[in-house]
Length: 226
Length: 221
Image (cartoon, helix red, strand yellow):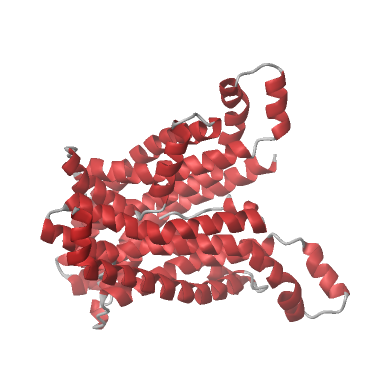
């Protein structure tokens, strides 16, 4: 069996690529959750110029390719004598890119709640922060969970661009193994299997959450694929 | 500083960038047309529940949309030849992007068809229309309208994803940008990346504004 042979001989490389893919995705998810929440906060800020900064971030980032951001961090800092390695540059790029989509998901979640929720909160004498903390955010969280899950699936897939800036993730290691063994088809079949091992269960979980929590109106919003 | 930028953005370089941009747009347009047609076919087949075909398409769609696009591009260029299918970088990019986008569009079609009011389907069935006629005259026209905003978003993603064809040496925008700044990285990299970003941003922002207008017009009625 060519597959077992490949796994026996190059299992270590596959495993190391798989770990890097997973690690980069998890770190970028945490980073983009924090950054995305901040951007969403800016975007919904009651003072227009501040909100405009948030909007500019979202519009700019989601209309340029992720690869361009990655190249910026990997090659573009040379004039400043900053040299980031592929994993760091890629993780930064993924974080900045994904944060724009997470910010939009959070905003859409909060906006889809009826205004009456705010009014009722004020009427009962709660403060802005209390309404946010006890009424709005717990409900928004339910709506935002499925799109966040989707973003994580995208992160796992997008982390493959690290292979273009010498970040030794799964696809990069697959290419290396294919070049060493010339067993192109079996190697790339294994690479696909490793990706699907991560992404299919996650996608199924997202579908389940969509059905359970009813985030339907968000699904038809601008969904990012890449 | 200003001189360095002017040198980086000299007409010959900008011209080269625009040549790449043209390839980017060509790949994107062809892939959009193909993936739209295939996506509707896949989505409609799954909606109709054709025995044998529908489950097969469902599996294919699940696999395709859960793989990285970069993987699919590399597969089209370097793995398809092991099946005797040899494609140049341009058509490898079209095949890889179309495979992914058709899967995404078919999901949008399915959601659109599923959102058509059940009463209409029942009424059509009661008046003796076949399932295919219901799809053709009642469900699909409504679904297609509802699909416009998510479809446009999908096309914006596709346009950005053409940049991944750097990996298969297609001379598109990102690839040409790299060639220019590799000439003198310290001087050229920032201005050239900035010019590249403006080109991508320009066309995508325009598309997303169109999507917003369509969304407001169509979803309100």
